[in-house]
Amino acid sequence: MKKLYSSVTGIDRGSVQLFSDFEENGEMWVGRGERERVVPVQFSEAFKSVPSVFITLEMLDLSSNHNYRAVTTAENITESGFDAVFKTWADTRVARAIATWMAIGEVQGEDDWDIDFSS
Image 1 (cartoon, helix red, strand yellow):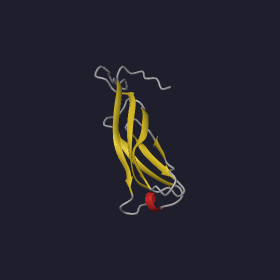
Image 2 (cartoon, helix red, strand yellow):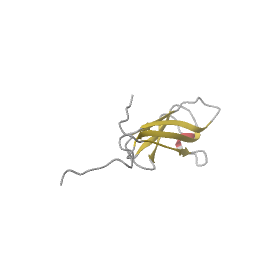
Image 3 (cartoon, rainbow, N blue to C red):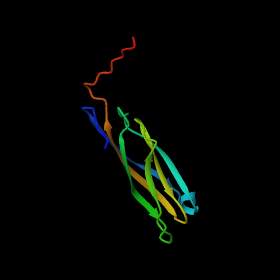
Image 4 (tube, rainbow, N blue to C red):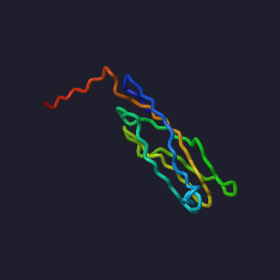
């Protein structure tokens, strides 16, 4: 469990198009085997510490002639953003994918002071 020690909690959210490979016969649509797409996402403002990020598929356009194999994760999470990662394998054919995400964590509050004691 992540515990928040700030008096101010921030929630940021959004959607990101992971790819649209159907029109140009991209690797997710015509490829075989392990395939991966990484899309960097920036938060609207930085969190005070690394937030918790939830990501899910909002839209997935698949070929009905093949098995559905897909994994969507949030990786490399920092205070300012993360990588939205989509993976598939074998003969799965994915035309398009859009992910929705939500980040929850500590943010700087109006009453938080940042005092520099180094001087």
